[in-house]
Image (cartoon, rainbow, N blue to C red; front, side):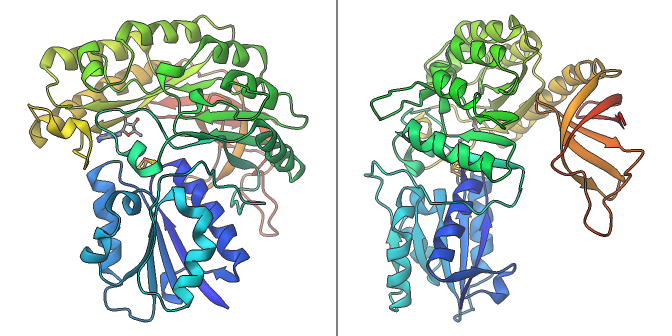
Length: 441
Ligand code: 5AD
Ligand code: SF4
């Protein structure tokens, strides 16, 4: 039996791609092993969103320089971005394939087995979406489900349109079928995935848009929670908020990356919306009957970001009062328009701004989380933290809550666990990034 090892970097799209790659390889007679040492084929599913992520991959590849007994494969975004250049930098690599070529993995494996030393899958010219008959998922309760692949936007800083190719939506029929199969297999939470789920457009005659798809998935019997990620404000319509407002199965959390609070910077980023347009979308959420949590991504230190632009981002944080943000220093990426821009900032200045943004947001989160004290929240139990001896779960708003349970303080030796169950938890404590409490039993 041929053995493979796979390590995944990057976003949820990549994590889910790896789940599908595992199924594909298993179908070709390979078995998955837990360490690279045991494997004949070592795969890295890579991320190139920022330079740091990319460097991590090259560091991994160094580990295998002298191991001639193994074939090393680079998959995902670094593979697509760097292509055959990877062979020059890491001559021991035998396979380089981007996510738009995964349908061809079986053929690529045949070539590798035939002794071909440099196999590539790098074409982006495809209408294909990567669908497999079932998916290897580690969590038996929560599943990812891809609805759209690729991205056809052209944000000036971003590699994704180049690494994942143009947008391709799956048919609504195949999405519904997979969702129903997941429920039949015992999954109670589904996260719909895509680089920009809002621009989903059913390629079949039904022609559903994202809001309608979301509504219909929310009607599937037996499904408790539906999430989606990630959204682009340009394609975000009020119907999405209305759908969430009318069906509690659709989780009341929206991740709507703004990137900057300055319209001038948004314009140079080619984000295709203004600060005011974005704030109008935030209003839809704030005016909803359900309490929707809002999270975002922020880039600081984009070329030409003035002190006043940066201030606008801080004021936007004040205005929106996000529940959480992911903030990043701008990182120069190959072949992106922003590389040509003037006024790139020093690392020191980017770091300074990042610290300020993070501290600013921390101050916003402290009272927001404190307002949960005394509330009873339903969580889906995710796991157990041995160090703190607390169970962990998420509420529908995607807030993690750590909690004690009087009847079952820990998982039992016979494997009995609370994981996968929905429990009510009374929140008793909060911090800037955390909530904790006691299960109501
Ligand atoms: N530099 C820094 N952050 C980036 N992101 C995307 N590209 C870059 C880049 N070149 C961030 C954006 C995006 C998130 C996934 O990563 O905020 O929303
Ligand atoms: Fe990283 Fe973006 Fe590729 Fe996801 S799509 S793996 S975040 S570069």
